[in-house]
Length: 120
Image 1: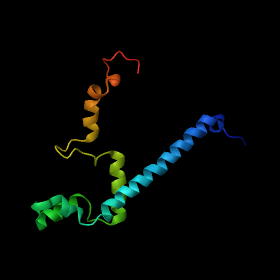
Image 2: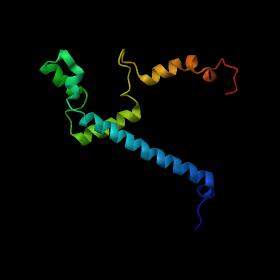
Image 3: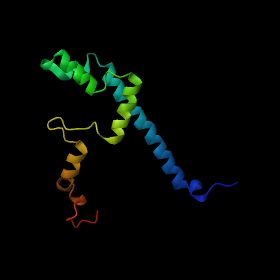
Image 4: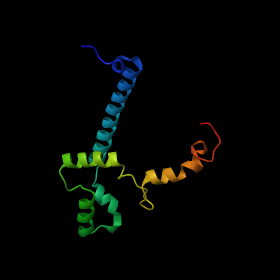
């Protein structure tokens, strides 16, 4: 039985290899960033609270951030939120970073603007 032509095409194999390598790199980055949060000395909740530390605030923030769950559950929750892009928010006002970038795109990237006459 022979393989379909699109599987044996050199460009399809190249693209499949690149996508595979990209997925490996993405998984590696997710693991490293997640591990750094847990390996850095100190408690991230305590650091986030700073001088506003109270036992009630500590428990509330620890629960809200999911740090009271088992580490495997935390990791898969982290991966899921990274896939949904819900964890990325601007610290000043809490707006999602993706929304801020999309709103600024016409101003910062004139070739992406609908009014632009550029062929790009």
